[in-house]
Image: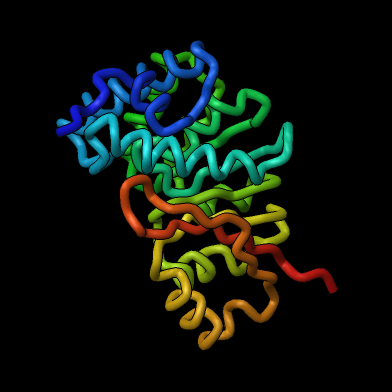
Length: 215
């Protein structure tokens, strides 16, 4: 019988995820704050070190591989701050903004940002409203909405960003088929740019890249 590692550093090491010590310390402080606030507001289901590492950290690091240095990134529907907060911690070269339309969640994320002294802009707004005023290189999202619904939100706003990166589970093919049937993919280029297994399972996660096709 194996026992779960009792620290974030040990859990990261057990899954061959190598990060600088300073980043691990900040990640652990963020994790502790997230779990504390989760007792009052439903922010995450990943309340063990194993799930935090194999879902939240892994997803964010896979995303980070796909984002060029120095980009302006918007985390859509950030919830408790994943992946935006983790991207900021592990990729300090990025300019990270997070948004959530649920005021209570945005306020909690703002509190965590201030306590951790992270350079993250927190907006309590819908993504449609944010994109009317700001532009970004990349939008990122995980578990916010099915693909067709997300594309409906973004349909008038593709001039405000270059690429949408979505973390998706096994239903992504079904969602793609529905979006295609509705005609939402006609002006877009969709590619699967990453694929990886959740540790200890045979469940595949993918990252989809969507860009507006050039005329």
